[in-house]
Image (cartoon, rainbow, N blue to C red; front, side):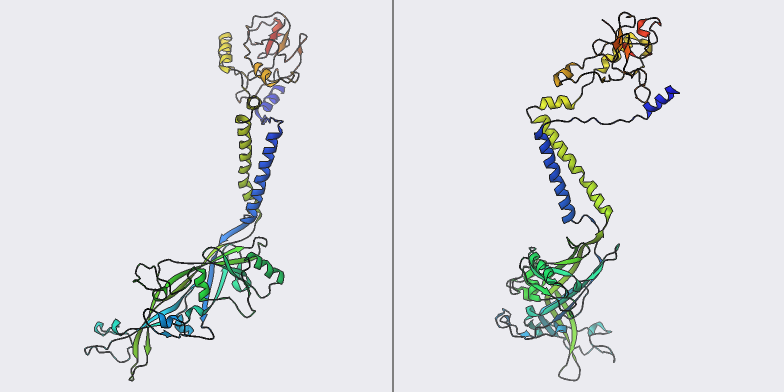
Length: 501
């Protein structure tokens, strides 16, 4: 039973790592400095990038826009100085933005009105056919360019736009509208232009927003206003367009054609995110830019009163500003598993600190040879041990020799002495049977699992000599050793013994 219990201890033995403590303040200070720096970086990254949140992409939002003309319309200068010598017309809200679109709007800057030509005599329109529709291809209306009239929309830059948008999550129950949130309008370079705040905001919060936007104006929405209000000029300036009278860079633009004539496309990215210090609060930013070289055009048919009783079919070809709203960003809620995942992923950075200190210690410091001798242990040449053992004991050539075990009585050795003491133990022939003996610090044959045997592992006294003495070469006791030999007294088979003086 004792032998079986001993084998179980060998099979289920626990292996651990050895730690070498290098008492050098230079290495210690460098290591702790790197550790503190990495810890600060990890904490700052988790807070700034909000890695403690379980986030998801924004889905299922909506954007609604309306437009109104300014209260006092005046005739701008470009109505008299444009190269086309075209007059300006004052358009209503429904005329300047002919139709409602989801997450987009079209604002007219130039209008070309063309009357349909008279139908040929061969064309017969059945009674009740709506104007502009026909059952005969010969009756299709024609709009000759010769009779087209060109107009510009007056003071279109001063029209005001109101934007209402909502945001919601898919996995979470997050749902908000911009009337209850804080938002910032930014230009194409990321500079804040204006901030928006709900009507119930406190003065301290309003001052905090003013600091965030670096002195840009903060607009507090009235309680009866559901969205954000800004002018067309604000959008153009944020996109980097200082004037619609600048030359167009569209590939299809003719020489001298302006943006007011050709049209322009503006992209408004609405980016949502959790507030940094208040993760349960959602905020948004408007990022405004332009699509360089893109034109915007829209064509529609309307009926206008004619000189007679029949109305005249008229084609309105509009060029203008197309504003496209794109909702993006991530929103989320606090989740413990997200924090743990971020921390575990960051632990690899601590290994970089260890590797850097190890490289400096082993390759750059003047004492690198001494550090290397303490860090690395070089074993005996096992090929010599195997060849010697097979030559001396051919019947037991399958025995596995374990490395020597250091005894508790052996004094600590300095680095040069430790290297010199790592000599190969050459077993002596089993016929040596004179003198006192002591069990050396080697292990008996290992089990099939590579574990050390319990036999001969204890430290004791044999024939007056200390077990574990390293003073003399050792001899392996095996089954061929004579039973009456002094080598065999009190020593088990497989123990390595050493002759006395």
